[in-house]
Image (cartoon, rainbow, N blue to C red):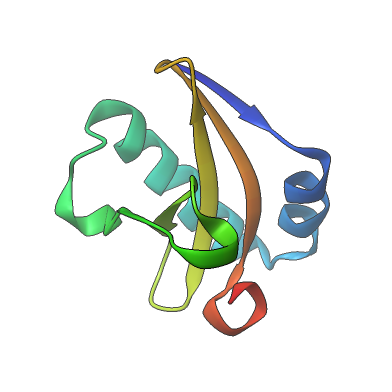
Length: 85
């Protein structure tokens, strides 16, 4: 599995508090190990985000990604539920 980040994701990530950045890194390790772990609460998105998936970082923070060629994960957005939706 290859993980990539869009520039927009990188900018949003840098603005997050270090605690949330650490939580994302922890969830990413879990995602790489077991993408079906229920703690990630992964689900496909609809509407404007159709074709994307949401991963729960903590109670309010979500990371939005897409899958390319089955083995490339591209994270595009990260932020609170209200910021993203």
